[in-house]
Figure 1 (tube, rainbow, N blue to C red):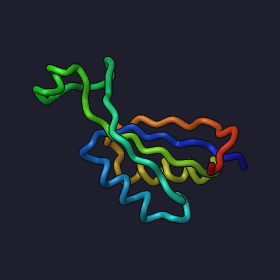
Figure 2 (tube, rainbow, N blue to C red):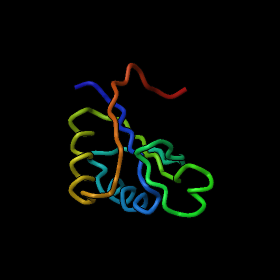
Figure 3 (cartoon, rainbow, N blue to C red):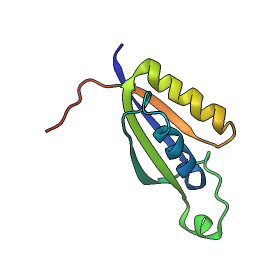
Length: 100
């Protein structure tokens, strides 16, 4: 099965929980990258005064690569643990990957 890139964009207050979930399943996730992001657009609810002023909401983005079946299992794991966490995700095919 071909590898896919799973990207999760989530509110900062659930990021540590998702990271812990991923770290607890080395059989599904060999590793991942987490970085800070800013959520923009009509689907992003701005709540804090600083968000209302800046026009964006702080988010965390987590990316990991693996076989599609495993990445779908990761999605099911996250959804089962945090069913209402407001996590946006996407899966895309990986054409090539490696180390330089």
